Amino acid sequence: MSKVCQLTGKRPISGNSVSHSNRKTRRRFLPNLQTKRFYIPEKEEWVTLKVSTHAMRTIDKVGIYEFLKAAEKKGFDIGVEL
Image (spheres, rainbow, N blue to C red):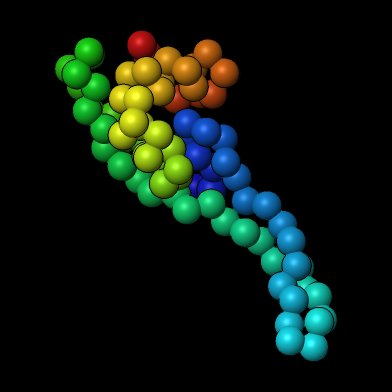
């Protein structure tokens, strides 16, 4: 399964691990993704999404329905019809 947030599009980025002796080796920084079920009261249905914790905090602030509408407008494939 891909490590991409369905709502924000966050994906792994690459960088360097730097040791105490300042040697650099390549590594990946993975987003903090969680699989979570959300209830959409406007549609009266549950939806399971793979989202980042940053997206979860935003959903708590603005609401799932508004966040899904904004993500759909940006062109993200959510898998939910609004």
